[in-house]
Image 1: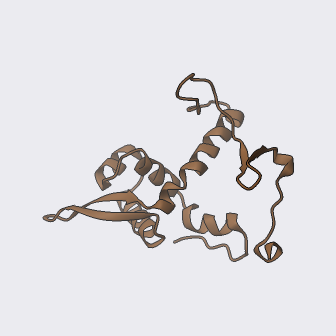
Image 2: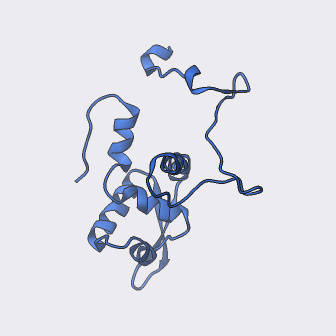
Length: 146
């Protein structure tokens, strides 16, 4: 059963969709090309098969994945990320960057593919066409933006 946060906050409402145990890891495996039930079950050591099935159904309902039938008897599906699901890649990268900075044991790093040096997050304003500092960011509510 999903936890539901009932207050107007992007973080809370996003967690209503992807905040359940295993959900982010399932999405990450799908992004890495492990797109069948069995490949996910193999890659996610410890996840019960019924829980994987439930999470996949939930991700489909939330329009983050689409099941594609690739075998009729017995029916078997490949799970493909929607555009909305693919957009979570930036979130995964932010979590990896946070881990690089704060985990006692870092398992992965984000590096520039060409020179192999560690990268950092930059904020960009497409209106001004400038990179901006974190101190220049303001969070406003929808009602304040009108």
